[in-house]
Image (cartoon, rainbow, N blue to C red; front, side, top):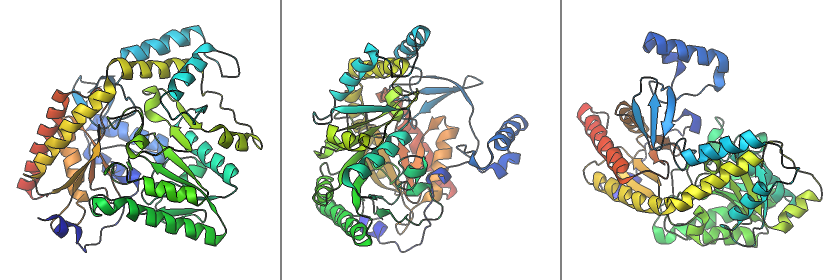
Length: 459
């Protein structure tokens, strides 16, 4: 099938909230074996409607190491999904740093402690020089919450522009700029949604200007409504939207548009940061742009709750002139020890280079699979963050096939996830220690699952 044939589909497909993608339906618990049914039912009773589990048959893990997770029976699964343990599950160097520091001292950061300042200086050294102030948080949600408040106070405006399937966190404020969490679909009065920079459906040479045009229209609408424009907030890899990284540099026109309008550019690096894209520390560097605010989270502590907001002094000063900020658990000596150990591992084990090398191999192998499996419409991403778009005949998003593939891989003990407005994009984001052998294992499993899906008519 040609690319144009795929894109011109008129078949209606409803969008899906991010938590519904590949989620286990608790009503199906009775299909599980007795012991697993009991555990799933117990969890549902405890957590209620907020309980979310993955896969048609939920998994229970008891141990992790490197790129592997192990269940209670000792069965190993290849983890090509979890980006929180960025340098590998239970990396011994990170574990040792946490154990050593928590046995010595763990206290909030209103006391002087050299490890906290040492870590801050190391982290800031990886970012543009004008971004010289750091505020620690515990999560990416907290980071984005503070970033929105910084932008509001600095600009005097209340309006934000985000992509239409973005996820930036789950505080009350950040939920308003995370449309993929909503089951209603309406934008709050102070937020405008723009289409994701879809490099599959928009010609590469047009993508930058096309995206900037949508951003400009959203800004104009915020201004006309009297809300005003405070910031353009973007996940640098557009993870929940479906993973968009190319062509490198396409973000520059949209960022320039935001700056001309007097707003800030907030780069959400929770997904793309710490070497994930394989060519540098930060996803925004791929596009040659310098943010006004950078938000960090998930991979920063390799599983320990650690986040941060980095910005220019003038932006932070405008906020602190009106409000104080303090976070009891953020920036503690243990957090600093863990964060420093993560930086050590990335640097000393060459994990940015590994992400680039293994990611390039994966992308080539996935593109080769596309020549044999017509359902693969597009392969995209950067480093060890890749998206594989699946479509049906006529180009309709193949969300059902994506779910079949994800669960088929789970049966083959390989873990990946889903992304995109319609849940038809396979999301591959393994730990940065993912090896060539791991990548080959993933490709072999995906090839077999797609063959099985075709044979059974699931494709």
